[in-house]
Image (tube, rainbow, N blue to C red; front, side, top):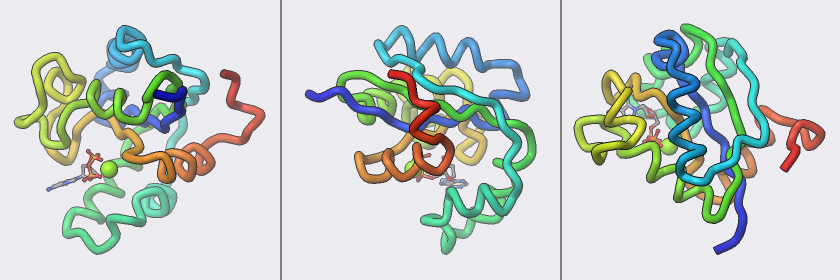
Length: 140
Ligand code: DAT
Ligand code: MG
């Protein structure tokens, strides 16, 4: 398996509860390296652009409001099979279905406020990293 990069977001419910360090420890314990990281406040329009693929879903407006409600920490994780590995560390979208020990099982509040985002495939990882970071900010 090749070394990959994936885009991660620590979402408002988690930054609000001061969980950034605990979540980062989960990534590092799984062998994922945090090679870029910044704390930013998204506008609702920026959140909408990032989640444009979900624009037709009934929860889209609520999702964009939530993502703009508090600062988020955007980061690039690097490692062997990082995209899938991060999805495993995150756990299922709905915390009720997330495996024990995963970030969402331990920290998520609901299916909507589920603490972390992670890219789901190589093409989306590339697009999502470029959405937040310039090449100069990625120090592998
Ligand atoms: P994931 O974040 O696991 O990739 P997704 O891409 O299907 O999940 O959805 C993106 C986000 O949208 C998800 O993290 C939280 C929100 N969401 C998804 N399904 C939802 C639902 N049924 N109700 C409310 N929010 C939902
Ligand atoms: Mg997704």
